[in-house]
Amino acid sequence: MSMASYSLLRLPAGPRCAAPVMLFLLAGFVAPLVMVVAYAFATPRSFDVFGSFSLANFASVLDPSGTLWTSFAWSIGLALACTLLLALIAYPIAYGLNHVFGRWSSLVSVLFVFPLFVSENVRLYGWVQFFIKGGVIDGLLKSWGLGSGPEVLYTPEITLFGMVYVYLPFMLFPMTLGLSMVPRDLLDAAADLGANRLMIWREVELPLAMPGIMIGMLLTFVLSVGAVAEAKILGGQSVITVVHDIEIAFTYAQNWPLGAALAVILVVLIGGLTLWALSRLDLDRVLGGR
Image 1: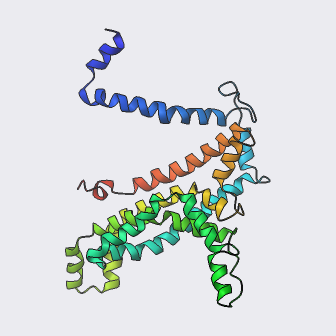
Image 2 (image 1 turned 180 degrees about the horizontal axis):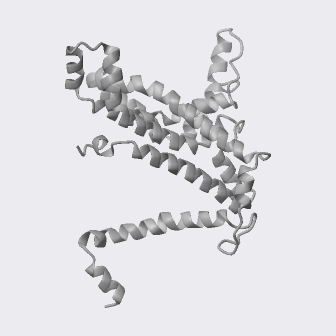
Image 3 (image 1 turned 90 degrees about the vertical axis):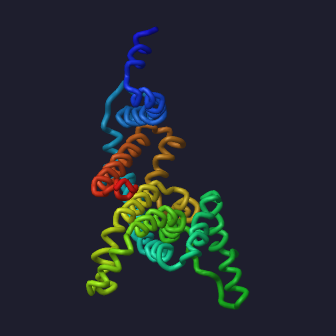
């Protein structure tokens, strides 16, 4: 028996059973991430990974005279707008699923889940057919003698619309979970003590549901920052997102170090935000631990 095998057998049962999973994570997640970080510090437009060290890629991204930083601004701005809009849209729906729809709540939930079984690109091209000249809206308005339909395709606004449409379920269900964890007894007690409906919502219901709401907002923001199909299909690249720049750097431009630098900055920004948000959440209560 080799020394490595003997050392592995001497480990407690927990680490020994977790070893295959840890090896899988190291090979499938950590190793590619290390390669991306290494490429980010390589000489621009080269494949000299681990053989050189340069900050030129990060300087190119942060150069005010360049255009790469604008893709970050567009991605973060659209993600923030999408998250705020979905918070306003999903909250009444989540409230209805918990308090209004009753035995129909399961059917309503299925209606929101069903689009996830269809490819995102197929759904977005469906909206293109809906809004395009000669499409559904344009054809209906012309048949009713109301003229041509509005030209909404290939604009930042329609890109935001597509993001709101695609990421609604990711905001809705954590928010629904958060609202479902608010004890009805507390709401009834607050009403018995003389609190009006607005006060109950502001002082009792919203704070108790906030962990689920925050998880929904965090999940939506993280996903929408990486949105690219909406900008390509609906927006017609009227908006260039950071993920599109990363794709171009790794493919057509063959500038892997620049693409890696963009990816590292994006991971640091999103990772830092995620860790900050999770540090402010009581995950034990959200997951039912206490």
